Image 1 (cartoon, helix red, strand yellow):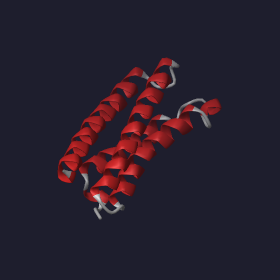
Image 2 (cartoon, rainbow, N blue to C red; image 1 turned 180 degrees about the vertical axis):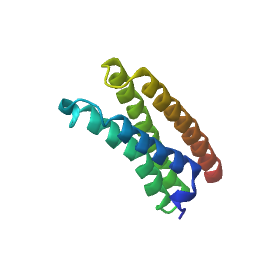
Image 3 (spheres, rainbow, N blue to C red; image 1 turned 120 degrees about the vertical axis):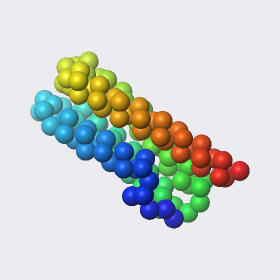
Image 4 (spheres, rainbow, N blue to C red; image 1 turned 180 degrees about the horizontal axis):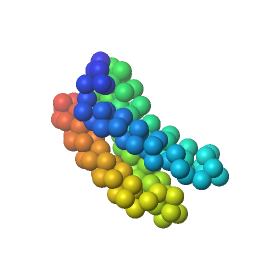
Length: 120
């Protein structure tokens, strides 16, 4: 069992969740159960799946939860793009969040590779 708080990738994911929550505060009220909720849920899912994987026994299960986190990162990436295109998210905010998303994707890919090499 790992302590998720010690993983830099989890800390980055948690920071991204906080940034997403802040960035969606000014979304239209009509989006409360739409894009606002989707962005918040998909961003939180990334950090939550990393944490849950850390609580599982064995690299195989950890790998599985990292893959789920990767899916959530891609989902978040799209929701942010849609928010920008609908003019809910200013271009500057989108750029900053997109940079965080790309960094997190790279870190998750590297961790998945590391876990894969440890399994074999």
